[in-house]
Length: 111
Image 1: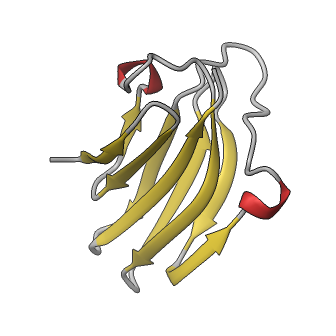
Image 2 (image 1 turned 180 degrees about the vertical axis):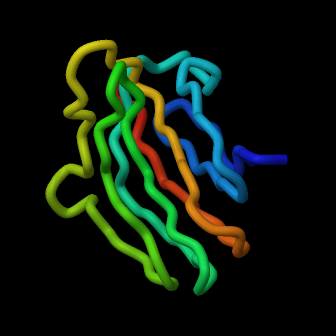
Image 3 (image 1 turned 90 degrees about the vertical axis):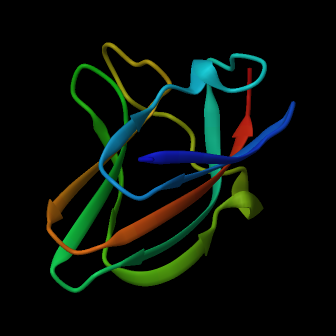
């Protein structure tokens, strides 16, 4: 399973990525068209780098991840989708390297 939805409530969702994949947020409860990232927790193997990006015609990078960390963005309203043309509201995870990783995103459904 590449994306595991851990929580899918009316206002919040928590998703876990273990392989490169794309999250279609319209499949979440309430079919939101926008989400913001409030927290990210991740662990990335030494020979691996992971990029999290907003889905669009040209993906808009959010974060490049390595090692293991957690970040809270809720204090300033979370990370908002600022992608340009062809924006879908979705989130893409791409991987370089062959090591194991996980990325957990805590999302606030906006609309």
